[in-house]
Image 1 (cartoon, rainbow, N blue to C red):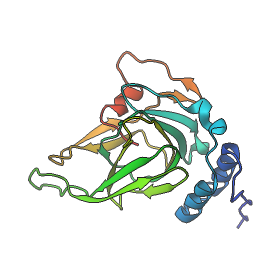
Image 2 (tube, rainbow, N blue to C red):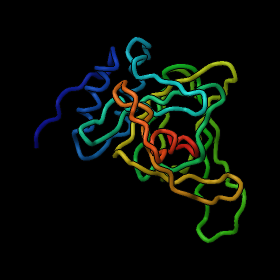
Image 3 (cartoon, rainbow, N blue to C red):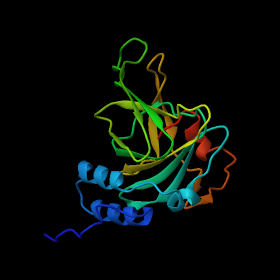
Length: 211
């Protein structure tokens, strides 16, 4: 069995973090603790990620940074004042979220029971995350919603999804009713994605929102 390459455990830049992630995801099995640790060890530097940060007055944006050789997607999510996602799943993927700027609130929910009567979804927990903290979630842990709690400040977060996915399930908090939302990007590698007449660009996912 070929020995895994050494990776930079304390990346000094976003570029070094991406290099380390490529090595960690070169294997078939994902070590959640290693990925979370290396993402936490990278200390946010606006000079690293500012070129990927794009804000929209109407919705938060998803901005692709790296496609991880098909093993993962790494992206910046930019949150305007009081913007947030809907309650959503992660399509059986690992989801890591690192705060680069500002703060975010994550509210977790249990999955609605199939066939049960419509009712308010059960909240499991609520957590506040500050700059450089990293959160992890997968569908086995539950569903979540992410929000920028500030009415005056924006926020920015770095998200990694493995494997990548192009849709997820979103939920109505009041009834538990689910629907499928398409995942798209506001920009890729710092360049605005082309507008599509059918609306299937970043707005598709932002209306209900998956992050």
